[in-house]
Image (tube, rainbow, N blue to C red; front, side, top):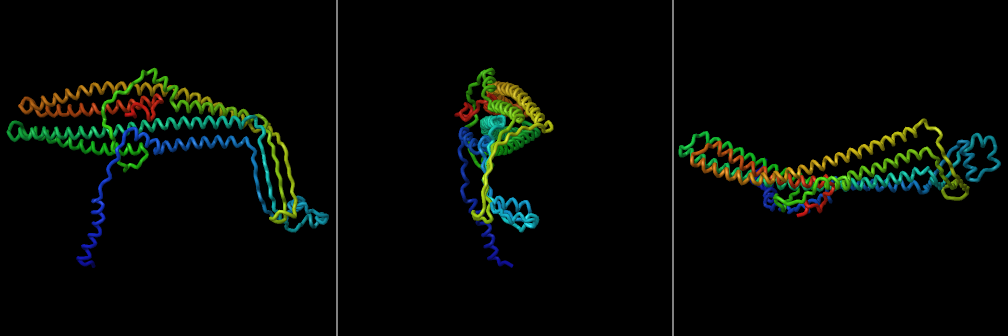
Length: 458
């Protein structure tokens, strides 16, 4: 059982680390511009690392296929021992140690165990395969090009995610400001109602209604704070950093004049520049090479081969013999049960599929461009309407506050004006946010979004 003194020391030992930790200053969040955020994401986002790995795989595939055009050399060292009659007879011949005594029937039928160490160098070279290897190289190059286009598209998608997440943080910050301001306004309304109730000018229901509205505004502040934390976590995920990382955007959500090109121009840019369309075009070219490879399988193949071999009774060279062999082989498949024709039909069907996918992708791109363009136009006009509504709602709130103080209106009218004022600011900042993100979406749809885009640059 611990004494009182020991108990006190134990409590101090437990609380001391907590006291030291609380005394340490909290790390200040790092300032972050949108341009810096995009740069970090293009370095650390795991999706980009995946796309880079795909390009490395495709580049390695090119080297693998190209290796089939080169001669292949091999080396082997084999140790064997046995009393198989055929093995013993052939091994003695290879070691060049065969004698007349080895022709005895007992030596031929039941030889003693015999050992052999074989050193072999071999080589083969595909001289001609009806151009299948060349078609394979071209196909690998096309797939490598497709992987490069996919990397470009991944970069654009990452930039869009960062822009969207960054402006999400800016919007959440503004929404928190609006919620806190609305809470202050509701507090003022409640204090007015309290004063008028104390003076006997209004019934208790007015005061209770104002208190309920105040509680609602407090709940909105809590929700806005949590939304801001969630938006920051989403930004960290888009950057490819830990969720616990702390960044403070240096910019504030505000209107910006961004150049909006004409719809036909954006559509033409998309059909010309979209990396995903280029990727499908490269895949189509690669599939044509696959069809050519299937056709080449019907042609002849010419292979050269050669080998040199040493056979010795011990691991150390000597006391044995050596031999070499070389030749040229011509192969021509006469019948394989229709497998090659089936493969050719399969590759042609895949080619038709890729062609159809290319057309479907072009149609989808056109629709994406129009949707993004109309989103930009809608959000731009909504910003103008919401900007004008803010001043009108604020003036309406002021008038209703004066009328309520004079007893000319009810608490319901005052709270309705207060709600309209809060809603007008919320609508305005949401419209500004949608304009920026929809503009980034338009550039993404047009295939022009990059770290130097107008929506990214300050």
